Structures are given as structure tokens and as C-alpha cells.
Image (cartoon, rainbow, N blue to C red; front, side):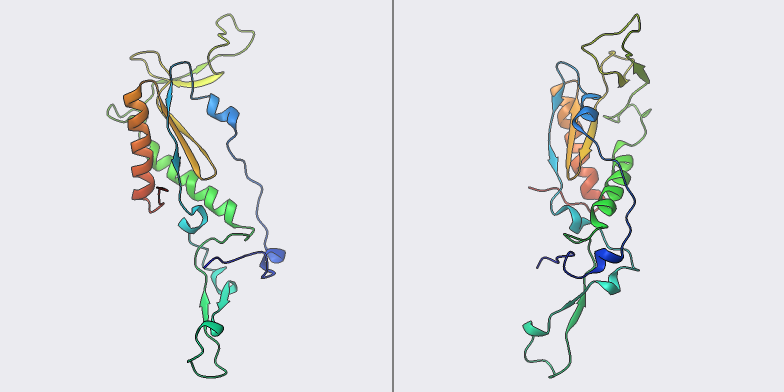
Length: 189
């Protein structure tokens, strides 16, 4: 069953703040020639996040038609609990949830076994004496090899992990998928 949040009239009474989202340019910050990338898709994106308790009573679904054997004249109502397609707050709510997931998945950047470890931020500003057009303007770098650290960027319900080697790209993808699953956010098959 799909709950269509556009037909209830609830959107007319909701306010949702503006919020930023990653773009293709954001992804370039974690890439350099030789970077290995993967794709981790979140399945049923909105359905991974629970509606706020103050909104749930307003998202009732009348199921009386599907239960004709129930007491006549007594409606059968259920409350929709998950963020819904067409509901104005769903993209904002799901994006907030993914921002929390980002922080949990990245872990401690100083932890040596962490695939997302990094040591310093490199600025590569145009017009500076050390500017290199083949490198991103801002990047997280590891001291051990001078390469851009493994990282990931999320685009709505797609996570794009990357690493400087094939093995680290795979480990980054594995950590993203495992972290999402740990948090109860399903990875699409």
C-alpha cells in the first residue's frame, strides 16, 4: 500500500524549512584520477524514517472498504507511521536522517583502522602558487600516501563511496552499506 500525502490536504498546513542537498560538484571533492567508486542505493527511502508523533494522528487511512465483515457503521482506521510519498515533510525528514547516518558511518577520522580516516584538509585555491587544476579545491588527505582519503557523498537515496585503491573503494562501500543496515536503513538489492 502506498500512502499519497498529496490528497489529504495535510500539506497545506505544513511548513518545511529549506535545506541543502549534495550536487555533482560536491562529489568531485572526493575524487582524483585513479579513484575507485561504488554505488549504494537505499531501498524505499521514505519508508526508512518514522513520522514525528505529532503528525501521525493526522495521517489516518480508512480501510473500512477492505474489511466488510466488521461491525456495520464502525470505520476501520489505521495510522500511517512512516514518511510518505507526496507528504511535504518527507524529503526533509529523510535527508535529516541520512545526515545523522553520514556522521555515524564516517566514524572517528583519526582511527587508523577506519577506512574514512584522514589527517588534514588540503586547500587547492585557484590563483595560488601551488594550484593544481587536476585536484579538487578542498579535500581530506592522508599523510601516509598524500592521496585523497576514502569518503562518500549522498545524493538523496544514493550513496557514492570512493577510495584511492580498489580495496579501499570496496571497504568504503561495505562500511556504508553495513552502517546503513545497522541504523535500520535498508540497502536496496
